[in-house]
Amino acid sequence: MEKLSVYFRISEAAEYLGVSPNTLRNWVNSGKVGAIRHPVNGYRLFRKEDLDALLRRVAMDNGARKALIPLENKRNFLEVSGDIVERVDPVFFSDPMTAAMKSLGMT
Image (cartoon, rainbow, N blue to C red):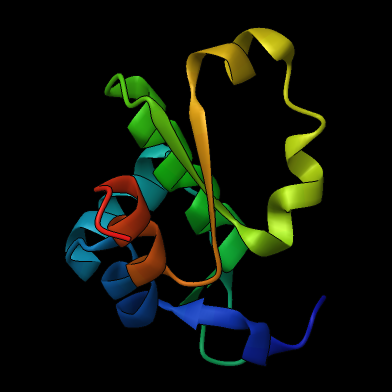
């Protein structure tokens, strides 16, 4: 297991996704996103990579044309199949605010 400090607590993950903690709990229960349990207190913990993957899936399911990709995942983008790459405009970002600004054409 990685260091626990690299995981988001549920309130942090919910804020990162822009949803309520209860919504995030429902998504965990329905299998939309994975969570691990803290080994001592049993709280749900979330990896940033899993949250980013969820954001990309939701965007694609809703017909989004821009793919918001964290810079640290840029290398993984090369592994995406060509048919998907042809349908999206990747926007690489170092933080969520930058991504939103780029996707809205405000930078």
